Amino acid sequence: MDEQGEVAAFVDRHGIETSLEFRLLTMVEEIGEMAEDAVETTGYGERPEEIGITEEELGDTMFTLLQIANAADIDAGEALAESLEKYDQRIDETGNPSSE
Ligand SMILES: [Mg+2]
Image 1 (cartoon, rainbow, N blue to C red):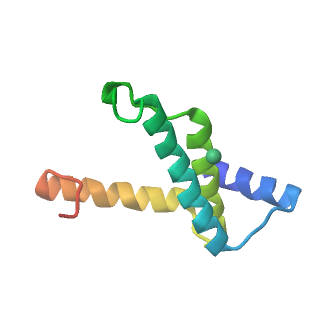
Image 2 (cartoon, protein in one colour; image 1 turned 90 degrees about the horizontal axis):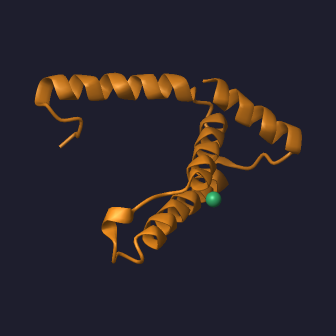
Image 3 (cartoon, rainbow, N blue to C red; image 1 turned 180 degrees about the horizontal axis):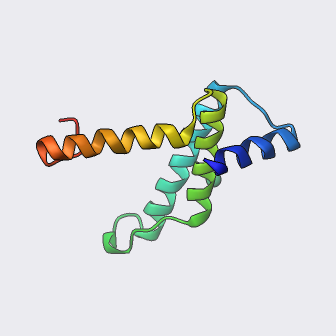
């Protein structure tokens, strides 16, 4: 995945390499920020039909996920391809992508 290499180069260029453990914590933080977007766009649940998230927080989350992939030495593109194949097989077998 080209984006994974771009993130690795960015992190290296700016000297902001950190541990996998810290990146996992940052991922939780970024997911929380998307949840905050959702809460705020709905007026704290009063307008559920208006739910939304910002491109900024989605981008932050993707950046962090690709940093995690780099820190764990996992090819994000291969991981995604394997997941799609797994879900495809589940849908064929059960009609549902869920494992339950
Ligand atoms: Mg953020």
